[in-house]
Length: 345
Ligand code: FE
Image 1 (cartoon, rainbow, N blue to C red):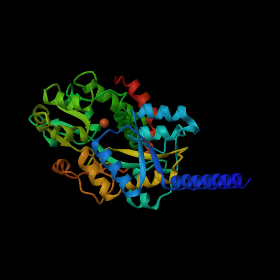
Image 2: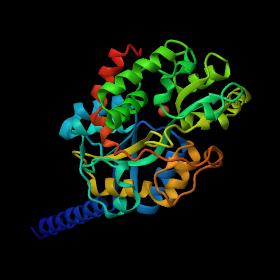
Image 3: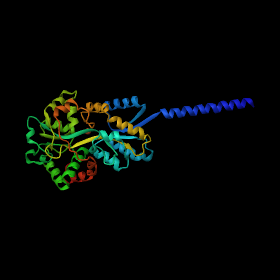
Image 4: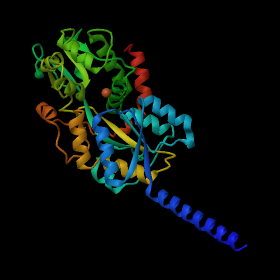
């Protein structure tokens, strides 16, 4: 009998010890699950730094933005996602209206990110900025020939404009911004005017448009800044030559400012590690992290205290459109319809 008591006591003691150990593990084991379409080395480097600083393990799920949004939708309230990172305010808005994100109150984020670069309901926050500019053939066009996006419809640009398909979100967001500034009627006239001046039926990505300018297929390409940044710093001498042949023009400097879009992050609606998710997003906008972003992908840091890269400095400073980016999402459907009506492929 005595032996049994001792054995039982030992068992109880053992299981208590085991419980305590488990509890301790739960307290120390912290994680954050990040769904991101970004696959840059710089991001990996940042995630590792976050782990070292906080002890919170970063689990990354990489897929295309649309796949991630679909995955979160299918997973519903069982989704392990804590943070969604994607590009374009239009897409972030799509995630928000699909009920995949939740509002976040963070004094730190509010103090760093300008208010027009976050969702009006704080479902997402910008991490980096990119401008949609005109890359022009330096040997055939002078900056004085250009002024606004609207002026791209002038007859002198007939067969000169290169731009990708309207199915691309960057173009949809640009048109959404024009709708917000000028209304639908003028926006439709604009889209029709650009279609009339296209050098070819839209094909390829932004980089291909710049290459087509260099090849003489047209004189102006509507593109995001970082693509030209990548060409400028490419290891491929052919690509560097392409970049050297074009200038960067920031449209609408005398009017509404150049259209700016963002990559951004939001906390998932059913985030199992919400606190960690907020910490993670806050970490990504610190000066330290923003420096890494600024140098890695030739984007503009959203933290105004952080310097831009040499490549961007060479293009000069410019006036940004300060339209709240939530409008890009809100006007997305209208933009898609107008593109269709204007026969912008
Ligand atoms: Fe892109």
